[in-house]
Image 1 (cartoon, rainbow, N blue to C red):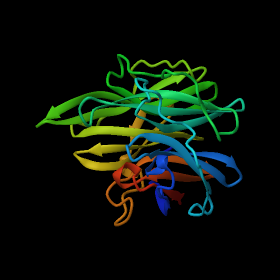
Image 2: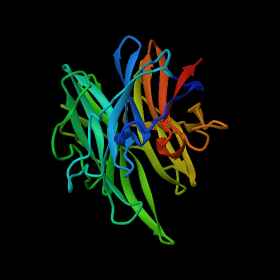
Image 3: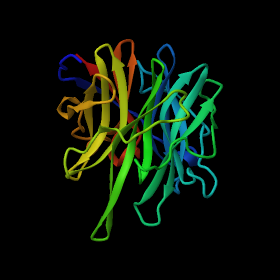
Image 4: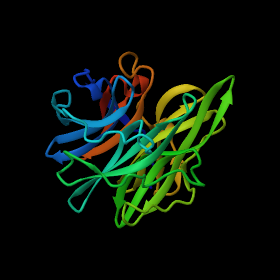
Length: 311
């Protein structure tokens, strides 16, 4: 990969905030996933929460050249939590979408509440759409990727994309929990898996983005873009107790990554919905320009924003 230059992002602003118009959209528009529909039109999926904090997946549609003008808000969720005892009983969150052979594959997070707050369990599910992403059906009652020897606590937030004939995935892997003074603290970082069909995934514990040192606890929601010079990744991280910031890394082969967080080029604002935290980047390329959808304070309780890369 060629030597990178410091990237800069211009914040377009706070794009969407849920207004409680329906029970599944009582709060939050968490983990935005933008899917290109046609021309300048994008459908942005996200997780909205009920008053009981159960997450459902819905969407808004917007023109990326005029994104604050929301064209449509889904009346009903496209994916709902599973029955009692299932891996997605307590909530579903979108992670990434792959269009393949005329169908859209939505990789999603299924969540279960642990016996003690904030303990939770997460696995990766798959839903498929045959109508261009308006409706989805779950591929299976079970996850397509669950906890394993390599991921003992949780697997979540996969970014899946097809790279030539390889389905690549970077995902969040839980490595442990610690209890101190009665409080639980989670630890997770980013690992790598791959597949030939998007269903059966091979993983061997390969770490893509590791903890810098003992002060880093959580590395979350990665997003990878392949360019002419290699691969670029954006992700969220918590270091030394500071709320989420967005990090950045580069790779020649999508396997070995070099962290360059100082080149991320985006940080919390002085005021507003992203003044305390900035997290969960989703990067798309439109007309040769990079756009980043992201969440702000309180993990997306107030919705999501949009930024554009500038020279």
